[in-house]
Amino acid sequence: MNRKFTLAVAIGGILIAGRQGFDAAAQESHDEHVTASGEVDHAAVAAAEAEKTMQRHDFSAPAATDYVAPRTPWGDPDLQGTWPINHLTGVPLQRDPALGERRYLNEQEMQARTDQYGERSQRLGNEVAGNQLGMGHWVEWGQVNNIASLIVDPPDGRLPALTEEGERRRALMKSGWMETMPFDHYRDFDNWDRCITRGLPASMLPSYYNAGIQILQSPGWVVLRMEMIHEARLVRLTGEPIDQDSRAWLGYSMGRWEGDTLVIETRNFNGEGSSTNIHTIGSPPFNNTPISHEYVLTERITPTGPDSMLYSATVHDPVIWTDDWTVELPWLRDDEYHIYEYACAEDNRMIRDYINSSRAERGLIPVAGE
Image (cartoon, rainbow, N blue to C red; front, side, top):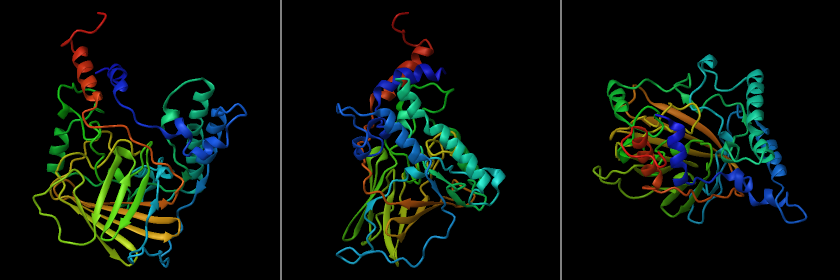
């Protein structure tokens, strides 16, 4: 399969907003770089973005455990606000095996990451200087930090092995990211290709762009709003669990408070889709990590300061995995972050274009001009 040909045909059918190419993370950033004639100085915006990327964060210090969160008018811990995780874009899901059980980089490794981020942060400026449009305009590269991997358990920061059944199901899954397979049906595409969801916990993990997360609360409810795929997860705090026969892509979530920590237990997944996503660095190479009806995701959101929280998620799916695995992410508040529309809808023309171009490559339909 000539993926370049397929992508060229399909790209016109899908729009995913890249923040940097539009307003460099906030309108305020543009306002600071407007010329006397009223035009935006894109080179200055690119330079400001590169400088922001090079800000260094050390997350190795233990999170505060004595912080008391403010309360909502009805008495719940108030976690509301915007908590984008784009500062973690470059942190891999899985740890480099050479790091063993070290959760944080040493100074030499930190410098290597700084050099890597420095090169990548220049891409937007290089494209602006060359009057080009490319991944520099799309990718919101994270800020330099010393986190070795998102996975903290198992201790080596690696995904556990799949069960025999998990391997069998993975072999049956299909994705638009698989370069050697033909496309003839919408089922040849994964849940993200089809703009349904990135799945869980993938939807809660960093991606190359649109990494905004917003929390809203009302009596008896917490809403987790994700910028990617314009999803809103509804977490019920009261009432009985939903009927076990009711199933959904993101399952059904029940929450409870343990002190100031919001604990969310999600069950009733539909058994379709992938729990990992290729846009989180260090993930399996395709969106083909299966889930089963026995999948349970347990998340914990703990406020550690007025502008910081610690998020963790534990995957328990004995049908698919030989062991549980847990990710942990430090969240930072940014209420100036603007959540954009993620202009992607199920049944968009990308699917049709991929199928048509795949069939044309195989000589099943005529190609215009030939």
